[in-house]
Length: 369
Figure (cartoon, rainbow, N blue to C red):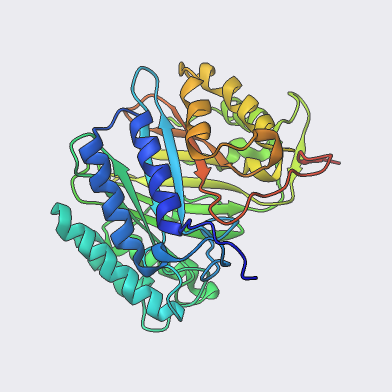
């Protein structure tokens, strides 16, 4: 007898989640439906793939290879901002084919909403060559605004011309975009992970460089910040300790998935970044999602933010018990940007294909010696 099929597809699963989160943050149903259609169009044929089948292709974007991730950015006294990150045209043949089709999808979205791709056009050959290398070619984020026209970001791979060329690629991209002193302001890192561009109508468009820091000691996290007037080392340490479940005053080593730093640049004349974000991969340093949510609920009030909506968002994504898996909250991030109050962001997994089993004990960072 043939096995019964659930009827769920990548598109139906992620589309339902997107609409549920849109409703949660108060977006109009018509606007939300437009965003869901745009996501479906950009993802391409993979949206019709049954979830009874394995993923069409591996993706660096998520642990279970769903080509979609959601995030909620929380600021004091304001409604949270909902974003959806996705790999356009996911699962198409070679990385070169994925690159070409992904770029076509990005330009389609840009035409849909009248978003300029001028910044991307200036560096396209660096990050989207004819024969790209690395883990991915192009990701897109849509920040979903109430007016129906999202703000768009492109995420590119510094290793597209080869991992040994990542530094030169990022340095040249920053130079072309007018930020001649930006590269030298970055902290030492084990890997240049992502290069990101704000596209279109942003009040202060940013260039962002993400760096990975393997085996980081908690006591060294304050040294990652290169932002002028950024968070004090004590604030970064306090955030990291709580997000990772590390008791205050105890040092630890992040020897599983690395901690990430992101520096953003808005003023070409400046010699320092205008923003700093610390990303903690909480799914590798906690037993389960219940434990991670508890940490987030301790962090949010420190920044003047009510924690209720994050719990509701997890319920909108999945009916499963939080104790039954880990990774629904993939990262917790502390965000500092010049001219704005600090904010926190939670990155949320779709779990379309798989729920990751809880980690064993001990789950936190390895004690430093």
